[in-house]
Length: 327
View (tube, rainbow, N blue to C red):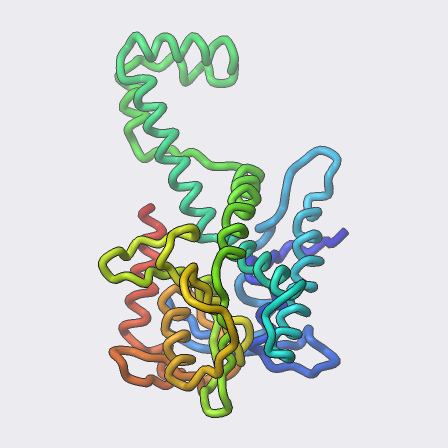
């Protein structure tokens, strides 16, 4: 079993598709990382990004804590090989399609953004339940009796006067934490639902032509958006939505429920438009082969070398980070 503690929520094998490295030594893969929060760019190894300590660690009797991480690593290696074949052959079909769609579903459901949203929702829900449980002195006394009977360690707290306990419950002096096992269970449950919607989409493989420049990716590369300005809400199962997923620096996938499937040569404008969508949805960092990529802003082509100092992109990233913190 693996003893690694640095768990990638965006797989290294996937990230290598945007990096440069000696073919005989993929572990030396490096690329350009643009940090939109800090406003700086730097060259780094794919090992150093999109990872959190013990992110996939589980606590279960009789199971290695890294059992899930090891299982993910094995699948991610096979998915990375499938992506390389799709890029080489220019075909998105068969077993490789199945493997890649599973990878997209995994990254759509296993990421820090979604975990934080679930944790915040659970915290708010439990707080409402607790506040309701102590809203009156009668309810509080009933709760206290149950606490004394089932949780002896909570007895000192249960002896607090009703008004003091209710004031504590309404305060910001505590938080409910969701155990990581429960978060992982939620991810696995949602995974199957998301995967079914991916198989229902019509997929177009976009291959950048010689003058198109490179696609970029990010720490949140599954980009879901609405095709209707009058209805901006998005969901994996909603019609008139588009899912964009950069496969490598030379190709990307676009999936909708409407339209046709196929393969197209993507001109520079389409690649830049895809890059803009990836940048807008990034959690904090964008990853690129080098700084020569392009992106669109206000219908104008912008140079990748200027992204780290682009005030619009930095403000959007900071707003996203603050929004996640407030949820």
